[in-house]
Image 1 (tube, rainbow over the protein chains, first blue to last red):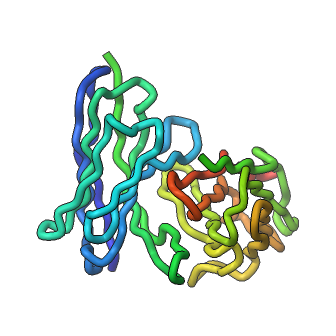
Image 2: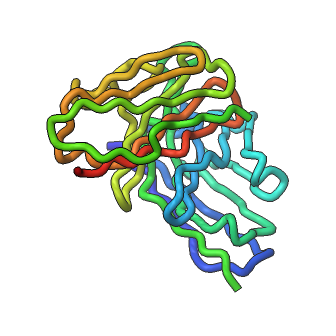
Amino acid sequence: EVQLVESGGGLVQPGGSLRLSCVASGFTFSSYAMHWVRQAPGKGLEYVSTISSNGDSTYYANSVKGRFTISRDSSKNTLYLQMGSLRTEDMAVYYCAREKEYSASGTYFDYWGQGILVTVSS
Amino acid sequence: DIQLTQSPSFLSASVGDRITITCRASQGIRSYLAWYQQKSGKAPKVLIYGASTLQSGVPSRFSGRGSGTEFTLTISSLQPEDFATYYCQQLNIYPLTFGGGTKVEIK
């Protein structure tokens, strides 16, 4: 059974840093690109970041570029999101998600974690 | 960035109704669009990918159409468990983006 379990959330002051983790199980982690998506309280889904299956390629939303870093450790089956210079607008539930390929260039998010809350407040 | 505009943002309907949600992209995204359902406090769940392919296990009352810039999600006969928020997502080009969501509530 595929499982994605996020951790590392909590309360942080504006300007602070936090590292989220997402532990994967039930599949060959190193074969899949992975993503982070967030959802501010009462708002819609917002794409955050992507890392390719081998870690060579990364992508970011403009809103987090230069402040967040996505990485992965396949020996630990773990995806990370290092968040820095946090702002109140970064407060959200953060989800990790697995990418499924259905064609040469067609993908979608087939499994999601349960989400972890990050609160940015003084 | 590609903007996805969903309409309506809110929809009130009854059990048994047929409903359609539209997602318009600010530029062509071929058929690289997915639809997700999210219930309160839960992670999103994929319904449709590739604009029109039903994810395994998803009831056949859900269907998707479209390509280029205009897409639709249709629920042919709304069931009590379908009351939720629905999002479209483009996976054609980075940064990936989501629509603003459509909340479907019971009339």
